[in-house]
Length: 104
Image 1 (cartoon, rainbow, N blue to C red):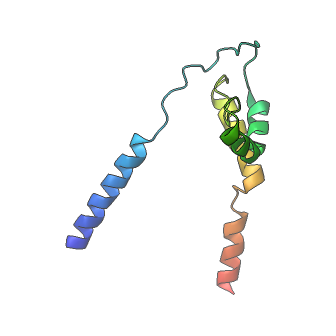
Image 2 (image 1 turned 90 degrees about the vertical axis):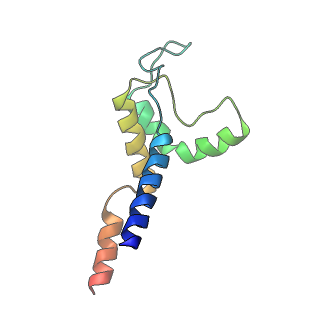
């Protein structure tokens, strides 16, 4: 009983910590950049694909960021996540391979 109580408290603390770190709304959504464009699905896809390179460059150059804040919302986000999944493997193929090895 004591272990369940401690585990419950730990779960509550972890969930509270994660909720405190959640991103807020993007107030620049659907607003144009000074150059006059808004990032959409395909730019999100490209930014997701090059995200690791962009992250490394952004550590040394303050004019480069990983994520474009001047975007059109959900479609940019979808493209960004899809691009990251393409490069970093976000599918279920790896888990299927592990299951096959475990089953043998």
